Amino acid sequence: MYQPAAFPLGLIGPVQILWKPATSEPTDPRTVWVRVHPSIFDEVMAALEEAARGAAGSSKEQIPLQVKDVRDKLESFEIMGPLAGKVLRRVLRVTVSESPEKKQAFTALLSGDAAESPSDAVVAVNVYDPRLS
Image (cartoon, rainbow, N blue to C red; front, side):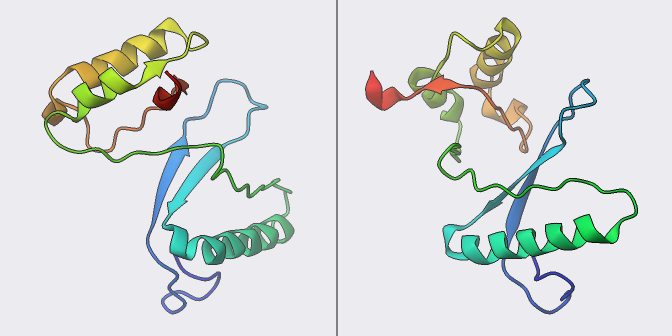
């Protein structure tokens, strides 16, 4: 990621971008998650807020952009290796509120061989905190 209007100078650092799929509801906002190392978080957040202010004021059609800090609402894990799925399946329990389809997809993803899973798979489910059980 770079400072707004500073490419190829003004490098902040590497980021990972995850798009949340659009729903069929036209009123649902499009969402993108930007994952960064904690050491550059403040600088990235400031750059995103600056870019959002510039984008909202420069277009003919006003597009509402919001930049939110969700560090205290999301967890992410990078577990690699041939037993990663088995470890996650034994530790994480999907909450009752999740749909049967999500539960089935989560179980299927973690049941198979790790080599069969897409390397860029992102699974968003609500799970129980294993430290509480």
